Length: 366
Image (cartoon, rainbow, N blue to C red):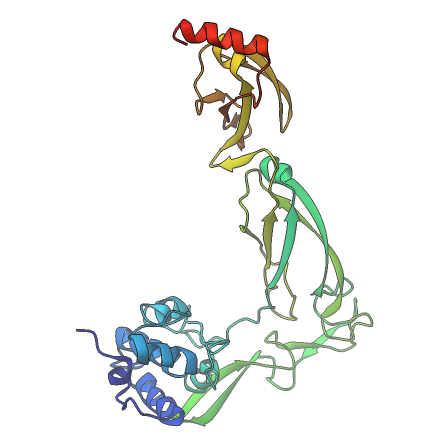
């Protein structure tokens, strides 16, 4: 039987938030996989327990029902949050662990004290700019055939004058006096886990080991500038409503590091006649009773032009006619089909002559 979150942290059900936090610190230190004798599985379990019990709403749900319905925890939430790294802090995302969950402190701060915010091998993590997310509204037709959108966004971009160096073009670079050209600084620090040595990138030279003798006049040495930038978003054919397009390195820029990503969430509007099912387009077509009995031809407006649809004699209500290669493009030379669902319309009123004709048909067994 799986242990309760309280048992995993070794606390009573009546434990206060401070007691929960203290218990987690002890357990995290004990089981962290980067420690000798650590236990990755147990570390994930106590992390998940803390994510739930440190949040008042989630803790109330867990106490009442034995599980959580509002987000992380209660069945692997911590596993996805921590990425399941294999014995190294690389891939383990400690920053922002408590965002939106009521966690009162940043795990990144705690573990940077212990591991120095470094990768295995002692080198500092490279700086990375923030990700940006935007929304794009798209008509149904454009979602089927694909399109381009030019979006103007406000963000921090690499300075085009100095190309991110922060130095005046043509000016010489000198050795950073803070780190003596090493690009990194070693420190002995005391933390809740004891005295540890940490390695961090030099803040003055951003890890390069060199500084500009003269700063760039455009960005004032920052290497980045704030402004508006036009971004071209290429939307593929057949995109679904709610899908997200990721544009690599199109997010916020940061000096001495890589840019974040731009995430574009696409909202597809509804069409009055067509709907998408996988690579096919589906529409309804109402035909006259006489057309259904004798056969006929109808002109239908598809998304890419008019087509003539032949109604076969004796077609039944609800049957589907397939028009090849008039659906959603799936490659440069291939498309899905257009599916036309037939509905037979019946008149509300009949003239005397029409009634006589129907009576004749009735006598014929039709």
